[in-house]
Image 1 (cartoon, one colour):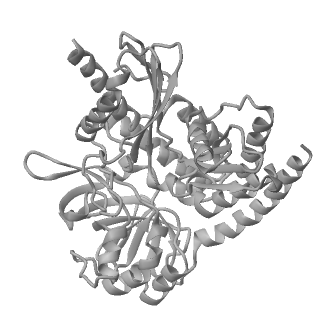
Image 2: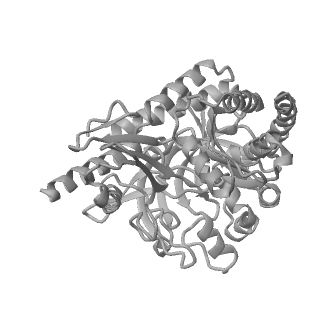
Image 3: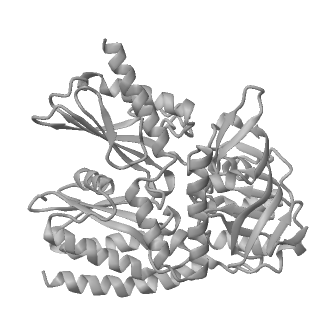
Length: 207
Length: 298
């Protein structure tokens, strides 16, 4: 479901194709509802070992993140700090992960590459970047941390199950047509890098 | 008597670790404000605003400002006359265990090959401790650093043939910036190490990250290269978090030591915008003060 609240685009799980198919790379959204963490080891288990993701993530959202969680005396969990980890590490798994799980929103840090973009296009999904190093901003959007799955993987790698409210800002980096914000930006950056490398090398050649 | 002294060090270091994962060093905070005031891109300005909101919330709620509290590293510059030198390695390890429980830190120590997360940030050779013994001194200066995944991943060292010239450093650094820099959480601090081999270059690049963001090398050519690289990387325009903007770096620091006639070792190391470097000095009576965090009172 998509709502506009105080000028913010808020998408609530379960996420339907019509919620995301009109979003474009560069747009900003917020997420409410269910959110699961999943990073390297979780992606490996699902896509390489054929294990079912331990939660209802179909039409849901996965967050490439390894949080700091404190278990309180009553056994409940407090989400202390949570922020995105480098999504590119999951590039080798993400196409299969989207296909296997039916996840609609993949959230992480930085961009991803062609295989993920192909997955977004074929299975109607998006990748978003959350501001990195802003772990307390993110943590205060977590209303409840209801549990942990695959805790044998250790705190950073386990699947943490959360309810979030207006989690974000999330910037769409790959849209459902496969447009890739960061890969386009990288072309600009690389062109400028080549100019700068030449300029500096000339300066140093005079030493 | 010694037990009391040991407690002073463990408590102070655990407290300092807790403080420095929640509060940025003075120079980094000031530099971020300076860069944000210069920024003109509206999206980049909004990203800076989120970053500053995070810093305020981390302080108010007393939580680590980034969830990745890294692998804990100490660079200990210990005076040869410091009375607790013998105990320091054990006490620093105890401080990490205490800070992991109390701050809390994320357990990030994964034993290699067995892939077991030790769960307490202590393992074989972790916390990482590098020692310098400083002659004719009786105090002990300790740099703390939390080597996170995002900023460790771009690190690279290579030994060039001298014929490649110092100009070889430029593409070596710039290629790393555009290939991996986006994911290392810009604006970045770039540490460049130059020396004779991979490990001296790599260690120099780490020491470069321990210098303040606005510091200038006392070697005139290294200083010139720092300035050229800073201008060059800023011109690439990564902006905060890599979304694009008017600057890319907090600074570029170069630390150089001699090379072998036949080698030129070069390494590059990155610090993220949340560059959590700390320094604390203990005197021989175990009085202490931080030289990076004016708000740290113990």
